[in-house]
Length: 392
Image (cartoon, rainbow, N blue to C red; front, top):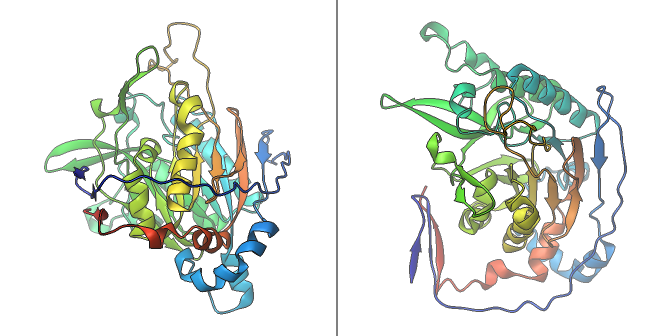
């Protein structure tokens, strides 16, 4: 049987079954309440992922499988240690109709993420706009491309290459803080062959403020759950067509947006074809799918691919009492929240509830080789029966 996706991956499969009887690993956990210096009282959650028991049992395997971790280490022991531990900060905040206020909130949270020692910060999906199909065209911006920095906004004699206050904010913050930023997503306006299209787009900035990845949401959120939620992003959005990832000193990192997490093939491509160590999904699940599937899907993608999975959501804004309309006239969307980090063993490393806050987690990338060597699924796939192909 041959199962084909949209234009960038396909899976050819035969019937098979599997039973995993391995014992679950429970890491040591510590949760600390912290308060930022920005005038907000944020709840910041951290859990320590380290496990001496798993390391001990898999030590003999780790040295022989270091290549599978996709780490690009420098020559010194100190640099190797730095590259094996990645501190991420997930910024979960309220998003409203005031674009300037949303941008100021994002700027404040990014500064606080740096104060907490993060090497990488992640913003939520659609952080500069209400999450409504009617709002996306009104808030859409012309975004930069891969390789662009602040200087490219001038555009020389041909005028500005792009015009986006959100992009300027992200570039400046990355440069000022010397920090990787996965910029959640914002609506992007593009003119293609004389036709205007709107995308749900994530920019990734390196610590110099240069765009190193640009992901347009591949799978549009078109659902109709009886008694739950009806939402069709395709009313105004177009789907992207790329499998997005970028190189860092910590290894290759893959990016999807929200609904992309439901499609195992996309994550499998990032792991199997591009050797990603971490999969990041800015997302805004809702009050129907959030309680049921948000954490479950993260665990599934982490276990499928033996990667860390990182998600960042907006904080929950309760529905206004009068008719479900915001004061800007857009339909209200209630986000689930619960920004989370899941380990390659399927543990919840760090999480929060629906309120505003920053989730801080230290990702021990040295565990990747241990987990992958202990359960070596990458080397056990029956490629004579099924195969995964990148068609992007």
